[in-house]
Amino acid sequence: MKETTTKGNNFLRRTVEFQPHSRNLFFHILTACNLKCAHCYINPDQHGTRTLDEDTINGWLRLFSLEHGSGAIKKVQDTNVIFLGGEPTLNPALATGIKEARRLGYASITVDTNGYLFHNILDKVTPEEVDYFSFSLDGSKPEINDSIRGRGTFETCTKGIRATVKRGFSVSSIFTASAANIHDLPNMPKLLQKLGVSRFFIQVIGIRGNPAREGGARLQLTRDVWESVVPETAFEAAKLGLVCHYPKVFLERDEPFECAGFVAENYFVFPNGRVYTCPLCEDYPLHSYEIRKGRLEKRAPLTESELYNLKIPEGCVMNKLFHPGNLEYDPQGEPMYKVACCMLKEEVVLR
Ligand code: SF4
Ligand code: SF4
Image (cartoon, rainbow, N blue to C red; front, side, top):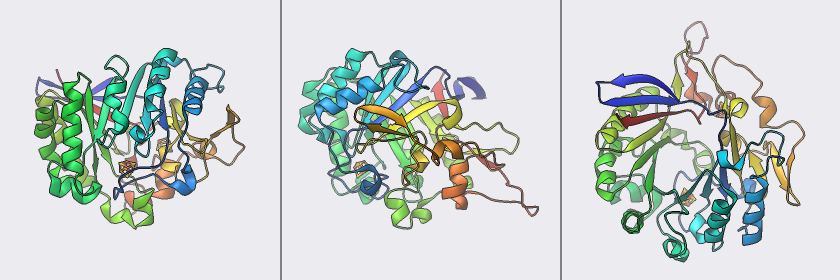
């Protein structure tokens, strides 16, 4: 982690560099969900419709806990697992998956949820077993959140947060920023502090899944809007005692660029066995690995892995391929900035 900027004497803003000895397993244990959020990136045509059963979840957790699972994989104690869906609490096997991940020695266990907390998940696991429940909330009030995530979701999600905090679990919250809700982002820190949330993740809308199908480019944020709202909100959140993370998104032309596909280990695992190493590729059959008959197998080219090799002045190759509208060029045809890896985050904390 590298400290890059300070504001006053009381804050630290740090770029969370890709950690050479850590890896993340983003484990989608089903694709089904009770909601239909406007910005959902789940794409059943590409990710399948299967709900993984207990044996498969445990088996795949074991697979990613083995050093010989793939040539690149490191140790389980360096691996964070994030259970995702769809809505992961809809999968009745989630609780046993959490326990198995703890037994195997994963570094941290997070459950990303829409707040409905199905199958009484809070009764089935303990704060010793789950490091964080992470709730998706896209607005500080029902009018904004529910217009994106569906009617009644603000009330259910905030109720879920309160219940989870009350049980002694650590809670984080994820806000997906788009043109539909960026104006409300500054109102989030106070709400989250009141609810007892300790970490706040701001993420930028990805044009994949629903937004890609429905012409979601109109939801994208310009560099000016992003930079005028997000860092300031992160400082406000830190002032209230929250740890805030947000993606760096834009880099100056002379700033160093790194692709997580090269320098980090992130595995985005889907129920149909596809394993991506870059989230921007998830709408395409470009995955690097596939789980077949319980084994993790490297796929033959052409996959995302080969595309990482293309060094371009615009920074992220996949951004240039899939979201060229994010880029701007000067009259000489040179990119005015680079687009950072979507996995590169800034962290703001109170010193
Ligand atoms: S809660 Fe998550 S998985 Fe469900 S529709 Fe919304 S974004 Fe998609
Ligand atoms: S988002 Fe871009 S930079 Fe990051 S892993 Fe994917 S291709 Fe590489």
